[in-house]
Picture 1 (cartoon, rainbow, N blue to C red):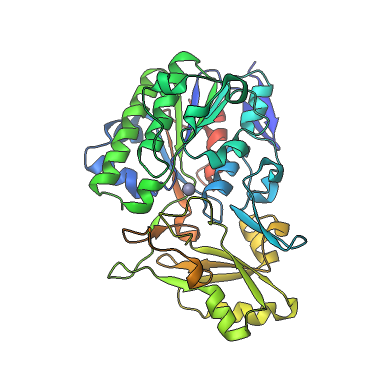
Picture 2 (cartoon, protein in one colour):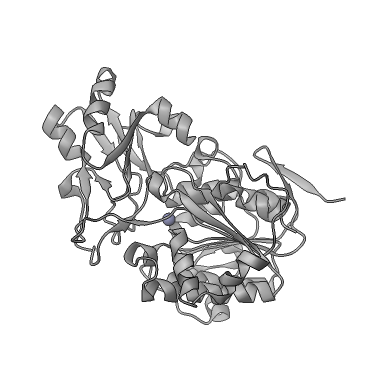
Length: 407
Ligand SMILES: [Zn+2]
């Protein structure tokens, strides 16, 4: 009889072969399509016939942390609690970083499978995700960014630099993601984990459009590792935390709606506080500009009026109240503002123009955060069975499909 485990109200079959879940950060589907067309992803090219190529929606905001946590918990932010890198703590009257595991409200599938006796490994590119992904996990968990600091006691593995044969990469590089895959290969062949979660960074996708030489080279690199995982007998399940789009005009200049400036000019500086939950310690490649913002108002009586004002700003796609946004996007209402604002595909939302350092934007801005970046791939090296064609797939169904629906 097959053993099952129920986590966050979903049942999962325990893995019987090494199963690798890959989250390619910022993987708009077109990156893979273009790499295949260019002949640079020969292994991925085989999977439409020999495996399964599906698509699903990520959670909103289409940011890294909410989606990585949805993937590893199997549930939306309304249940796991992580809805951005920042939220505004109204009691403390300050913006609070949500990278700490104390903000996580649900157990991860990773930790629960380890508790059930399965061998679990996690390798993430940036260290900011490590404490959330590794919460209560007894197993291997470390970041490429701090691979020189791994210890058996804290990370469940040691000597990883020597094993991988690469130096610690720069946090702003394609190499940071390559290190994740190289470390994954070493762990797959040495420790043979039952479940391994690999999470990259979107440095390349923020800088390079689908089909460019740099993007194709990045996908060629990944394709090579996927082939080696496949040849080593692993089940591979690939998805993304979010897509990626150009956020520019015809001349390559960024389309930015500076919401704090607009609100201050219209209502004075006291009424509204604009929070951009994309803000994190690594903003050089996107200037903390994404297509999602949440706004706290000092005077709740003005919510309707301010919502109308925002909806008329060029580039704004949707304005929702807290209740509407929590319901439609499955967000925790206590960690979003009075209003949630989404920008349309070509636009990003800023706070005040003098708060954004755009000097690091050496190429036309590409970013994410809105509904235009919601569609992401769900790709497997086995065929899927027993998934109703009408089922609305999400990226956080990836572990369900990988463990329950592959043949
Ligand atoms: Zn991301």
